[in-house]
Amino acid sequence: MSGQHHFLMTPGPLALSDEVKAQMQFDMGSRDQSFKDITASMRERIIDLVEGNGTHSVVPIQGSGTYGIEAALASFIGSSDRPLVCINGIYGERILKILKLRGVQAVSMNASSDQPLSVVDIAAYLEQDRTITHLCFVHCETTTGVINPLDAIVALAKRRGIRTIIDAMSSFGAVDISARRTGFDVLVTSSNKCIEGPPGVAFVIASLELLRNKGNPINSFVLDVRDQWRSFEQTGEWRSTPPTHVIQACAKALDVLTVEGVIGRGERYGAVRDEIVRAVGRYASPLLNAQVRSPVCLALTADGIINTQQDFDALYVHLATYNLYIYSKLHPQTRSFRIGCIGSIKPAWILLLTTAFRDFFDGSRSTEKASIHLESELVQEVL
Ligand SMILES: *Cc1c(COP(=O)(O)O)cnc(C)c1O
Image (cartoon, rainbow, N blue to C red; front, side, top):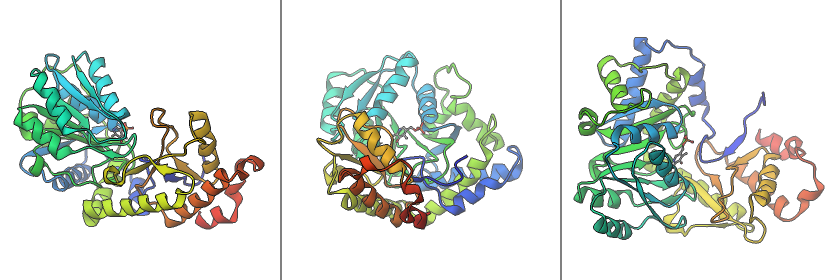
């Protein structure tokens, strides 16, 4: 056991507030009415946040965000469908991979990972291929933090009678998304990004129309979104054991989000992002133009110094000696690394980041032993 919190500056999991963590100490029976009430309140909060009352319902699925994605794809895309996956990063690629693993004849459109998806290009694709039944894409592509134009893509799909399945894992809670305004079919998010809850549950938000129709035969029990939905609607219960402690914390996190508001949260993250840009600006530059940067995470490049995963590993390990944890993988195509702006990031962590970057890039790292910083006064003060 480590016995202390990492200073998490990752795009999920993230630093939780004390009030959310405090909810994880209560043992509860998963089939008791009091727990069913918590599940119900969590589902209501999410539907309210997405303005989906009367048109959509939310189906929590045990597991990480990817489990929700796979459940949505398995439940709403059949073997005779022909989905188009619009890809500008690794999470778009993952959607395609899941569809292929499931034997679906999916096609894909690949775009540059440092630009938002182009609605014009998607429209042109749909024009020359009239067989497309579903559009799948990522709202905030966490690979670089680029925001894709959700409303415009859904509007385009609707005009053509094409269903939409959206990975909004890292945008929900910090970027405005409205079921009423857009009329998307399916949108997936998870507990441990901008909802600011612990990892362990995904949320599939689907139109009631899709949930009520019989759908294609499904060859999975755990991924069956409709069956899970019917269980919530009919008995208030999860079909199999939910992560009870996580759900309690998540319900609390959604109460907090409702008070802060999605706009307020997005502004708070945006301020953190801009502070990080200032803090490390001497050594690393943002990959994306300011207009397409999400407030969720910041992709940075340090040309000439960080070109390979191995180069980046040295920075990662160096930052960890300050108890600072950023996302551990370099994106090879863009040679960028990312810092998360979400969760309970303390101003002192950003100060520490400034010092850590300076020490690394100005070359003092080679003379210092790992973990030396953890005992330093600076870190102790923050801890
Ligand atoms: C984090 C993330 C995922 C995957 O979520 P897991 O919880 O790691 O399964 C998928 N898509 C996007 C856009 C994400 O940011």
